[in-house]
Length: 296
Image 1: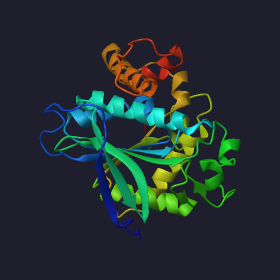
Image 2: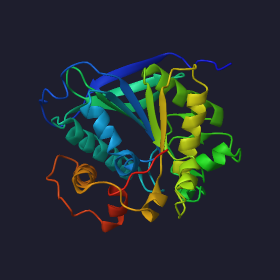
Image 3: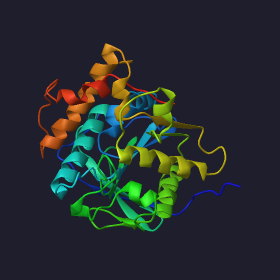
Image 4: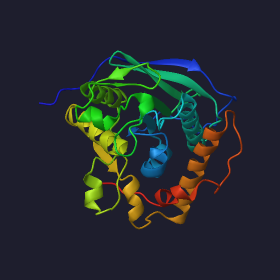
């Protein structure tokens, strides 16, 4: 029998941000359902899960996006902070709000995880950052983070992972349970995450995905399977890097919408305070994924 993964979870809120005000779009009616997206790095949701998250939001759903790794790539903490700042900028653009956010940290399973939500009366977006070390493409980890990686954790090569800010440490079992707690307490009926290896096989895509993408997909799948039967109505896995080997399948309009959000992310990543976006100026390296979306 499946056992519900429910534990005490609290939101700790404090104001942060750079400007006042928000449109009625973000501070309007209550949620019409809830979606949790769990990805490996800051930008995976923009590249691989969209346009589905945008559509969820447009249909009145609440969004909680959980970033499992710090996306640090072995770089100093400022790089992680810049990527987190970029995600806030992108979701301010998605929600059509002024770029003022407040801290909304989440306590789950006795741990506190960094979080943000728009500083409006009824926010429908929450971003949560677990900040575990980036494992690099092949799961080797990085010297700066003592060679930790999700792949090594999943395979039992290391007993636990310590977040890049030293705030939390998690064993493999604890990571699964924490993800389950975050999903369950959000009251989500839809979970969107990355490909655990099944989607690439389904579409006969070629190319290697990032190890963190695959492991996050597997951890989330395990977490959802441990939840009470019927709690999650839909679990969707999205193809990552190998989708570039497949035909572009998004319309020009949808592709341009993805590009605008991704440009907002890059602008926020680049600037400590709001700065003008630079449409079409991002590296062409990203274009294949912005024109595609494949899932099971």
